[in-house]
Image (cartoon, rainbow over all chains, first blue to last red; front, top):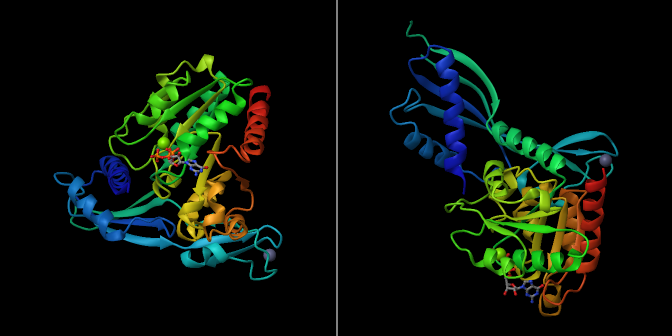
Length: 116
Length: 224
Ligand SMILES: Nc1nc2c(ncn2[C@@H]2O[C@H](COP(=O)(O)OP(=O)(O)OP(=O)(O)O)[C@@H](O)[C@H]2O)c(=O)[nH]1
Ligand SMILES: [Mg+2]
Ligand SMILES: [Zn+2]
């Protein structure tokens, strides 16, 4: 798994923004993580604690919100939300069509951060 | 400075850097007229065998090279080089996936002017490679019959990001409860645009239809 690389990218972005804003300490980082990501929240925090030692972001808490999986039916132009376990059997709630596409639920996004 | 907690807006996609590198790579490949194909699957699904078969099929038409990401071994790269196909072994250092900068490093060691197609054999894994844009023009995944027909349910992202699904090892179908139409249906639900081919890279069955598809894609790319 790629926890280490993802976490390192998070830290790099956080430290860059901290450097631009005269920050003495990063307290909390608000992250949006796609429901489709197989990374586990606790492990992201674990790796973050390890990588951030000796930086402004040391001991910062990662507040992770999962971004739901949203699919879209092109036939009805309808978007709808679905659980990860239902994904393989997903149909459009309106027309029951099965040709649906993924709109969101992927990736990693840093929303904002609380700093001193 | 005050002791008060301030909120700083970040609003950054942390994979944006990789996407930028990947986009830059696609531009570069368009200039050098080299079609980049990303091949992903679980370990042992038949990536290397399929690469060899595919190149055998299209060798008269296009000049191929291969970028190997096998973890800490040169076995696959040597197998390919033994057939006279330019192959570069990437040092992934135990990484679970390739990202665009690793691909750039590998391509820097190749003579792109002398190649029409470069196939990337990604790290064997259905989870992590799906998350990283390699800079390829097309991504292809292999699901082999012995792995089972429930894989679209377990690894939905991989099926969502692939342009092609190769169902490999169909010579095993008679000995297995693997249901091809169930896999087709599940894969199309995750990705209505996915192209599906049933092949056996061992016997060669079905490889021609897949090779035709690839050949058309490459042709359009080279002449476009
Ligand atoms: N019966 C059968 N065996 C196959 C087929 N394709 C590949 N194999 C065998 O499956 C084994 C693994 O094939 P590889 O091509 O090395 O698979 P790979 O995905 O490159 O494996 P790694 O690089 O180790 O992840 C080999 O013994 C192949 O001969 C097929 O269509 N049918
Ligand atoms: Mg291989
Ligand atoms: Zn619909």
